[in-house]
Length: 324
Picture 1 (cartoon, rainbow, N blue to C red):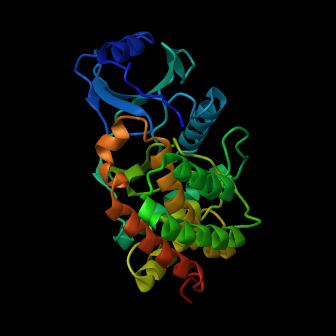
Picture 2: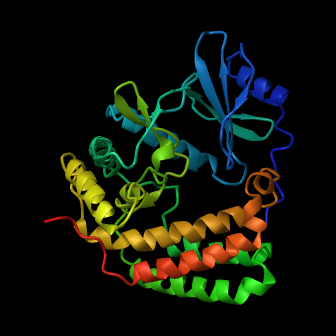
Picture 3: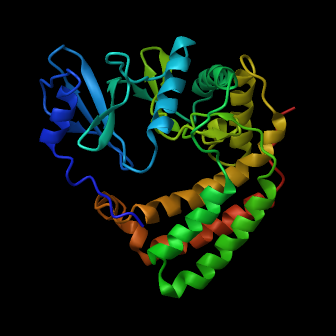
C-alpha cells in the first residue's frame, strides 16, 4: 500500500505553484471537499476566482491527465457545458515541486436534484450531447471500467488493509466472493465509449439556467449506461420512471443501446466494491481515517455484509426495462 500523503503541500508551496504560472492570489486559500486530490479556491489579483487542483502523485500519468483535459476542451468546443482547465501559454497541466496541478475557473451554482423529473429530462439531453462527442474517438491512455480493477483488485486491497474485523472476515468475504462471481458473469462483452465516469449529483451544477458538468477526474472508457444509472434512486417503480425520463431525453441527441440496461446492477455492485477498496488503499493518507473513521468500525462491516446480500439479490432479479 502507498505511504504517500500531501503533508508537504503547504499553503506557501500552493501559492508558489500558482505564482509560477503567473497567477497571484489576492485572497486566502479555501480548501474544497476532495480526498483523492487536493483542491483549493481563491480569488486572484486579476479579479477572477479560480480553483487549483493538485493531482495525487502516482494515480494518473501525465498522458492520462492531459487526455482528460483534451476531452474537456473537446466538449467545450462542442458547446457542452463543462468546467475545462485554464490554458496558460497553451498549457493546461503544470508541475511544481514534484506535484502536477491544473487551474480551473471557479463556478458556482445550485445542486442538481436527482428526484426532480424535469431536471432529469434536462440532464438526459446533456449526457446525450456529451456522449455524442465522446463516441467520436476512444481514450488511448485512460483505463477501462473492468471487473479486474473494480472487483478483484479492490478485494486484494481490502485483504491487505486488515480493516475487516477478524470476527466478520468469513461472512464478509463469503458474500463478497458471491457478488464478484455473479457480477463477473454478467459484465461481459461490453461496448465502451469515453465517459464522465463519476456522473452523480455532486458533479453536476445548475449554473444560471443551464446544467454544467464538473470534475472529469474519473473519466475513462466504459458503457454509456455508467453515466446514467447513478441518477436512479428510490424503489423499482421510481427508478423505472427516472430511467425512462433520462433515456427519452438522451436519445434526442445520441442513440442508446437498450441492451446496456442489464449492466445497471453489475455496475452498482462494482461501484460498491471499488469504493471499499479505494478507502482501504488510501487508509495511509491521514485525511482518510480522519474523515472516514466509520470504515474501521465493526458496525460498518456488518452493514456491508447486509448491503452485499441485497446487491446479490438485485443481480439475480430481472433487469430494469423502459416503460412501454
